[in-house]
Amino acid sequence: MGILLLLSLSAGVSSVVQAADAVEVLIRKGVDKRRQKDDRGALPLFQEAFDISRNARAAAQLGLCEQALGMWAEAEAHLSEAVVSQTDSWVVTKRKVLETSLKDTRSHMARLVIVNAPESALVILSGVTRGKPADGPFYVLPGTVEVSITSGTKRFEATETSLVAGAERTVTFVDQSKSTATAAKVSKADNANLAP
Image (cartoon, rainbow, N blue to C red; front, side, top):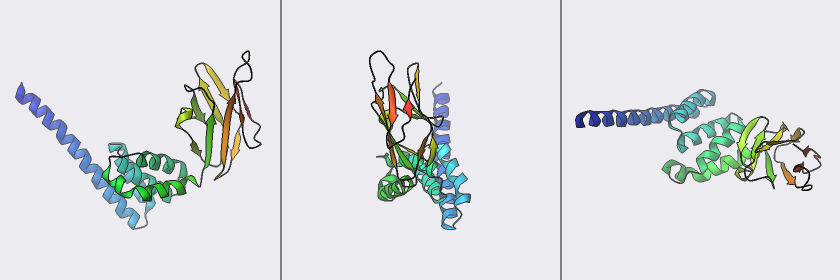
C-alpha cells in the first residue's frame, strides 16, 4: 500500500514538473517570437502558457503581447492580474515596466466608477459580469457601454453610455425615497438613469 501511494505521489509531482517545464518552454518561444517582431505568432504561445499555469509571469507576458497588438481590454485584465502578485520573483523584478505598461494600456480605455451601490451588487458591463462595485474602477473600451447592476433579485439598467479613451464616468446610486426603488444616475451630462 505504501509503495502504491509513493508511486501515485511521484506521478503527481512528475506531471506538475512537466507542466512547469512546458510553461517555461512556451514563454521562451513567445519571447523569441516577440524579439523577431512577431507578436501575432507569440500570442497563442503566451495564451497556452497562461492557460496551463495561471501564474503571474504568464499573465504578464500575455498582457504585454496583447498590449503590443492593441488588444486593450485583454491586456488590461492580464497586466492587472500580474501586478498584484507579491510572490512571483519575475514580476517583482519587472514591476515598474509592468505598471508603466498597465498605465499606458489604460490610457486607451475609459474608466467607470460605481458609487453608493449595495455591497452585494454585481456590475455587468455590456453583458459581462465584472465584479462588485468595490472591485472597481472598471476599465472599458471606448464606445457605447451598457451598465447593468444586479443586487439580489433587483436589476438596475442604464441606457447605453458613450465613453471616450482617457475619460472617467461615475455611476452613482441615489436612494430617491423609502417607498421607491433605488435609482442611479450617470455623471458628466450622460443623464442615463438606472432603474429596476
